Image (cartoon, rainbow, N blue to C red; front, side):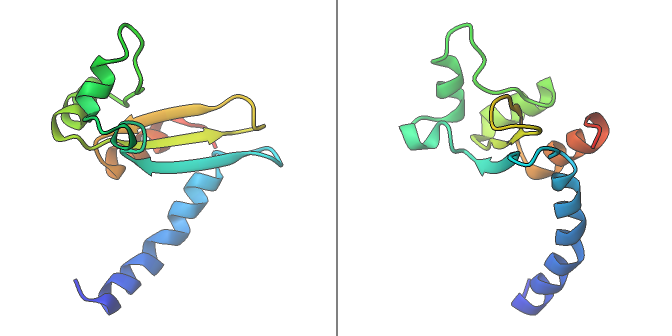
Length: 111
C-alpha cells in the first residue's frame, strides 16, 4: 500500500475509531491505552511464558478462549486498558489482533 492510499484509509477510519474509543470514557480524568506486547516483551518473555509464569493468576483477560489460544501461540497480544470514570478503577481486555479486540468493545461495552 502506498503512502497516499494509506493516508486515505486512515482518514476514513480514524474518526469513527476515535469516536468508539472516546465512548468508553466518561469522567474528566478518564484515560485509555492501546498497547501491543507491552507486558511480556519488555521482560524478554513470550506471551505464553509470561502467562504461565503468573501461576493461578491470569495476566491477560482475553475476549475469548479462541483469542487467548491464538495470542499466546502467535506471541501477539493487543491490550486495551481504560479508566472510564476516574484514574482509580479500570477495565482491560486483550486479543490477538486489533479487530477482535474492537469488535468485543462494540458488542459488549455500553458507551
